[in-house]
Amino acid sequence: MITGELRSKVDQVWNAFWAGGIANPIEVIEQITYLLFMRGLDQADLLEENRSTRTGQAMRRRIFPEGKDGIGADGGVAYSEMRWSRLKNKPSAEMFEIVADHIFPFLRAMAEDGSAHAAHMKGARFTIPTPALLTKVVDLLDGIPMQDRDTKGDLYEYMLGKIASAGQNGQFRTPRHIIALMVEMTAPTPKDVICDPACGTCGFLVAAGEYLHDNHPKLFIDPGSRDHFHDEMFHGFDFDQTMLRIGSMNMTLHGVERPDIRYRDSLAQEHGDEADRYSLVLANPPFAGSLDYDTTAKDLLQIVKTKKTELLFMALLIKLLKPGGRAAVIVPDGVLFGSSTAHKAIRKMLVEDHRLDGIVKLPSGVFRPYAGVSTAIVLFTKTNSGGTDHVWFYDLRADGFSLDDKRTALLAAEKLGPTPGHREAGHFVNLTLTDEELAKNNLPDIAARWGERQGKERERPRTAQSFCVPKAEIAEAGYDLSITRYKEVVQETVEHRAPKEIIAELLALEKEIAEGLKELEAML
Image 1: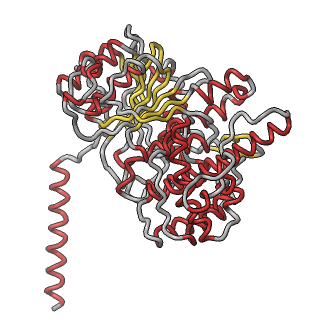
Image 2: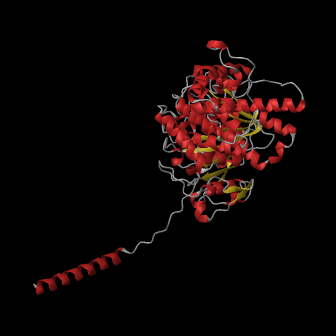
Image 3: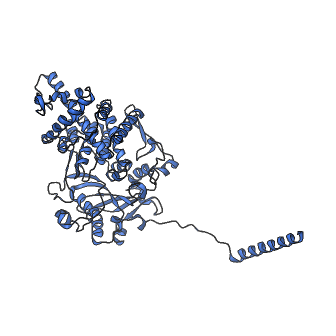
């Protein structure tokens, strides 16, 4: 967690951006991302220089070449002057000129070098309006201990949270505790190859990486596992260049050195090179609107013929997964019970051709204040040979936050999410919630019951918060996957008094009132 002092500094810079005329939170983060990238380049070059000095070998790659950039008078500015370590000490006006007229052209030129984050710098624009604001931001970022993965990662997550609090841009951000729940339920392993085909800020991929740091720390000792983590494990697609820049920086700051974050229109491009490739897919795809058949990937239409994006994304997940691969995806409720041929076809496919593992019904307030749409998490395993036996259902009623537009935390921060606890001396200390606290935060209960879905969860009655439904019953119901289709409601027995008894009581009251009126008249 970042300190209150650091959070306060970020808020000050954020307010300075707004006062300077940059009101779009995406643009603010984008500008900060460029500056973080500049600092990272200097650190990478310094590490290589130190290695060269220590070993006596030549530098394998020099990020900042010798000489000048050739822009402007006197041959331009020396590349060495563009390094963060020198730039941060320059007067405001000179710093501003170097960043605007020299560093940004340099960053755009770097887009051709093939590195994970530099590839997204092709359209980089410098929009910080004043030297004073630039200096303030540089001072803030320079004070962040970039060698500390947790601190810099948490700081970037805090800034990304500003997107969610900015109204119209909330669609870019899935609540982090819901992401953590989906990651906890799918339990990434050191050998997984993970994909998010609508990655946005890479929240799912970051959370998967953090899960591995916490649950499989030994993978970073083995060179093969460590290289797989940095080079081959994480893949994210998006068709918004700004999101690609922010997402790849988010991954980098969370300790993933070379993630595969790239431009791809997941529903429009053919998937021959991506089919059957991934062992885990995590996603909250956009589910608004429809596409034309002629702009939709033909290999997806072969799976399900529809124009609806939410159904096409379900087909995409099946396409991307390798046999045995698992998926957790957020879908609108309509996917679970829609009556169209395409809706029924995709549900039947999950149940009959693969293994549908579970459905978690989310409360409609989860995405407030941006949308009140009802959604669910669908968890399945691609088998190409069926395998569905029972489907586990859970009715999530409380996620630790109020379900109104304010989304106020109902518990202390360490008691939120699917794994309540806190870090102490580098280790995570788990907390056990009371029944009263679990009633406000169901996520730990979901994680616990999910682990028992093959055992005692089968014995729970349909009146419980979670229960299992056999495949045959789901098939008989037309593959309806809405929890209300199978949930039983306990009807409270209410005993009513006999009508004669009620009438007798009314007559007695009427007599009592009449006698009271007579006594009142006599007194007058």
